[in-house]
Image 1: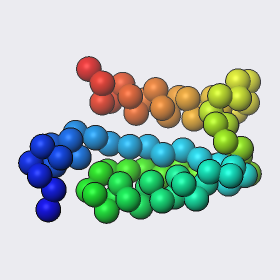
Image 2: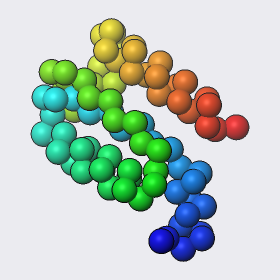
Image 3: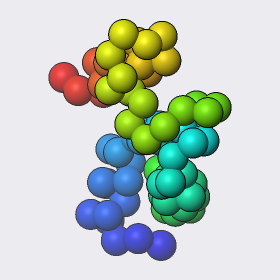
Image 4: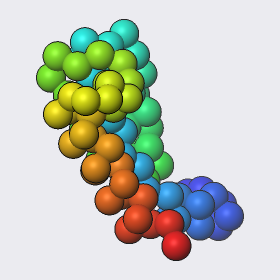
Length: 80
């Protein structure tokens, strides 16, 4: 059981982890998602098939447009 301060942080933190299947860091993202979930964080993995690392920054692509739209929606719902 985490300390109350850590539990408060866990309760306040929500994560959306984006990665692509063509990136070298995919296994790191998968481990982060697993560890966050085990710590009680509401984490949502989103894995883009065939996409490279930081595909969200590839301006002009439909994948980047969709990803940045999702990121914006996620942040607007949580940051006030």
